Image (cartoon, rainbow, N blue to C red):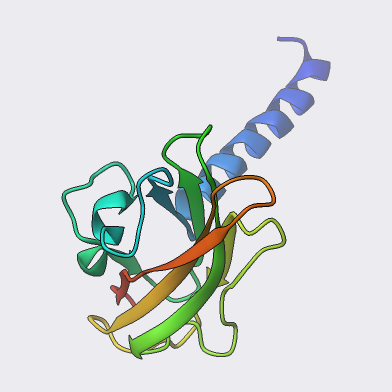
Length: 159
């Protein structure tokens, strides 16, 4: 390698290494809620909504491990992209420690996601926050809507 190429190669190596280290240690978590918008009703919320790819865990038992300062993003999507649309309406603390403190998560402008950051002092390791995500299903463009609660948990694993 020519000497004039060493400096750009060195700088590129540092940039790539820094990006990899940042990705390795960043505190971001994405939680995806999938909704069968064609079938959901008040009597089958547990059977028609699920987190990730596994339908075997009840929503009330679905627990995400979190740590102080971690950024959490909830996404909601319809099981059938051509079916009725779904969006978040609100995030509500139900019981246990309030891991978000004064920075309560709210749906963003497009309502397909909610963002929040765990506070720097949310509690003790092993503490749990139970919360609800309220979703709204729109059955046709400009048509009727219906809201449904989904109630997972957060578990503090490090402080």
